[in-house]
Length: 216
Image (spheres, rainbow, N blue to C red):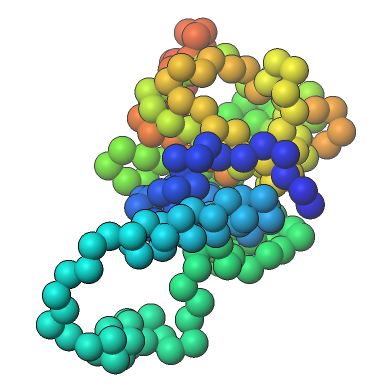
């Protein structure tokens, strides 16, 4: 699997620094596990950060290097690999997500949204929601934009927005400036993992009426 669509540099930098929320962390980790290009970019960001730290003026230290190593090994385990670019590679993005969920995708509590669409809510924080969307071949989703960021990772199948096709392993990075209408290809069903900030903003009235009941 070789993804062709990736998160923006800001997302990867925050991932390298460990600054992401739990939900955003999960979707980035799944993409990085199958994307060698993003692992290389994360490793570069880590090296750049290391060079920056080495360039800072030295400050007086009130502890020894041995003290630092002992504390760090106790905190993370002596055999841990520090680089966040070292995410175990896998050729199956569905397997990665199913392992994280501790459940097969088929065993999840899917909720039908209408003909050809089903949704499963996975988690929620104060400002973000994680959910799975499953669509039958040829299904056209409602046109919408967003109240904040939206990261959509394709687990299975493919969909296109305009002239851009997103396949398994690809991650679509959208925000409030993005208005799109995903259309699932006719080759097979499509399953996506998404994390959204705020509510989706639908253009048409029908999905707006359903929105309070599905919570997206």
